[in-house]
Image: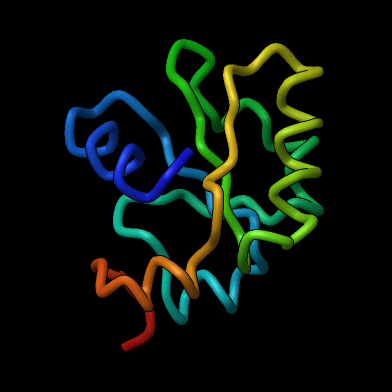
Length: 103
């Protein structure tokens, strides 16, 4: 999924954005509205994800293996899942909004 498509789908409420990076990285900055479930916890936290809506996973960049692992796991678990074609660094570099939970 491209950044442009993700922004449109997010604005329309058609997608759940899943950040699969570690909690500290998520806290430092993430796509607004994203939920954080680190890939290492994903299998035991599947119930937190909607089964009736597409999920788009992202992590550290286009070659970050965590998003690929999340897509594989969620597909085999029956989720409608795609991967953001890049990650947070590219999102931020494009000047798109980034949220953080740090005070």
